Length: 219
Length: 164
Image (cartoon, rainbow over all chains, first blue to last red; front, side, top):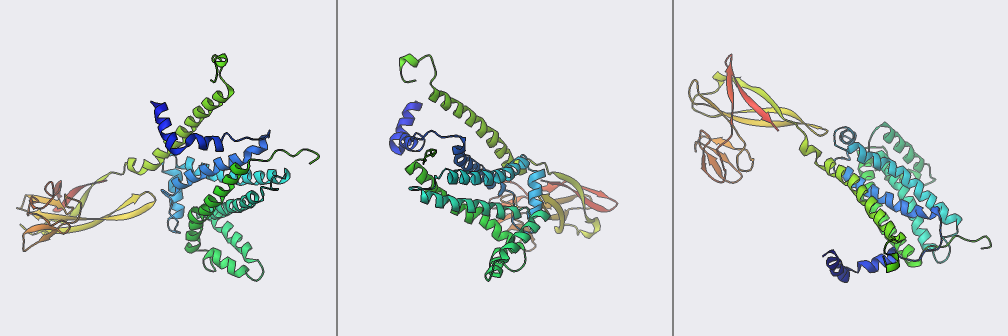
């Protein structure tokens, strides 16, 4: 029964073709450093799931943000777990993405024909940092408020256009409810959209080009 | 298992498949079950309050004519404190017989108002009407208006309010 159902689906969806191309592709002999991309992908999926769940209760307004996070932590069943995972996986994701970048750099894996994979990877790295920066404000506690004050202030020190960037980030010259709303929008809509598109290209290229082997000493 | 020579031994590939499926299922359950619980928490919360609420001195209600009494009660929903307004119709049928009706239509919870000319509680949403003692005259409501339990202490009328 299962077998018939599988064959019926496979004939129409091509599941086994996808499986062969994506998972059964040839890989050179590699080491544990080569697992960092998969680790990042796994953590990203965790972030998407826990992040979506957090929006069930979180409200991005100065009146309710702090209280709604408190509610998640203290009242909602497993709220502490969902937010805890989102919190820790966020930090871990920055680490795994950065180590992944270092591995690719030191093994020279960014070279022909994988330059474009590298470029999308850099975009993804910056997007990951952007997620960290925008997500940090959302609890709207003292730490969040002042970290964002400082972070946007740093952006403001850029010559000539600094003032403008600061105002764009804050949605005005002061940190306010407008800032919270746009950071929320960046955090759950804009940057995730960028990540989804860029990651799609990134993974397509990984499958299309395969991964590079560990360079030998005379290379 | 590809050939007979391997039939008694498990291949590495199959082992990995089984372990992945097994661990994957456990992880999905460990994450999935709390997620369900997380999502339905507000529905499980026990926020029932019950209280005798004073609705004013009995003399302020005329005999034979329903009179509305409105009040608000504060309520905590999640992280938000809101005030919930209530409206009740007090009908003194005689010196001793008092009926207090909720103004919530028993059809779909719109609020009914007493219409003196028609001598009926009218619900504006689906054109329902109830007579003076709460019985359905016409329209979709499935049952008469809800009644509150009442008591009179020192000339003050109380109703028994059950929230949630």
